[in-house]
Length: 596
Ligand SMILES: [Zn+2]
Image (cartoon, rainbow, N blue to C red):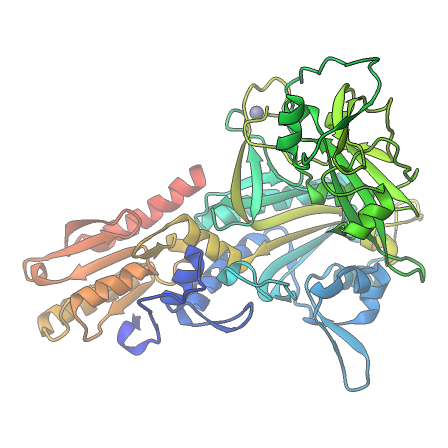
């Protein structure tokens, strides 16, 4: 049994001013963590105890479908060169040299290492499928670490990798992970949602994220309350209402109009008395193309055109043109590619490349512009716009694709669903991903199939952020006084608070009760500190323990008080019944979680 008087639980009245999100504030105030540097944290007793419980659940469930490995965190450059990611990971990768000058990195993920093991060891289809996992420290040189454990440079991941002989096998490995992840998050007491996610840039075919809705999250999810559709904003789509087209003026061909000072969409719409949906917006980027086979990286001009009331989704754009990253075009580059100033850019008269990221300009048109007519756009000339502009007739493009973000209240994309989309913030706790052949092919992993023919195994990769589970749980259940963790991941299930330790009878009752709770299989913390009762109650409310039993004045009459932290309610219970009652509540909580 653990006694608070002997433990190191450094609670704080106030959180540092830079702690903004609830989980960051409360992890510090409750003495779970302490910051060591930007995005790196010490995990103290309570924090580590909770993380160990999370790891225990993850391991127990993963062991049902996979085999646990433990790979190094420090990795040789050569394997990353084979996959192309030594360059591809850019500044996100921590790199170092050993005493002989050899390049090494700190692992952010382990596709390369697992694939190398498969390549070196697997020979026959009879050895497939394989699913290998590990629970291990990862490193990532985040540009802007913040929000406590939400965006860090060192963290703990469960990552697993599947190797199958064919697509049907991969589907099965993916579905196994989907089911196991749902069990893990349910057991951890999280209210999560599984969403479709972007899979483009990594060359995979199916990608699903597990998210917990919270304002502390940095991901946006679009979902439909009517049918349950849910997708990351990088992937989400919607059905647009038809637009009422403008009547053509004059001969119906593009006409130059003097629009002094009308650089913003709203000004243009007001000037022409049109809806922004009839204006063509231009967003100009420079896109980085990674050099292959000895070529250097290079920046290329990209013009994205979309409806005036829509926003570019840069992840979608990066995916369709195959860029490594985007930045905004500068004034001199605008002059070079458009021969015009910001605010008056348009597609008419632009020369564009036939293929994305060629030598000239890549013009990408959002699908919502296809089939439209009589629109307004910039004339690539200061203070001038064009009207009567019809896509396809008056300008063409390198490629058309959906590059817009969906907006709240747009129509659900599912056939026959009349629901409207809602957009909310969320934090990602897990991700499952059909990788395909990217690594097995580039790194030359092969096995012989049943006809003795060499085939390439198909892979999946799957991750769970261990600290993310803790932070998401805090974000979903906190109040002014602290937070409440679900019993399975709380550092302790129940704290027994002796209100006055100087009272020997009270003390004996508390000790006996803690013993009984422990004997019943509950994880107990005995608050035997020589402190005022109020201080102890405050600390207990702060540190995330779901149940508290106060052993106070009524104990002499055989009564204790049971406080439920989640609801902040308390009841008087007979001393000889309280152990069974706490046990029952913990079990009911788990049943409720697994049935919802
Ligand atoms: Zn729907």
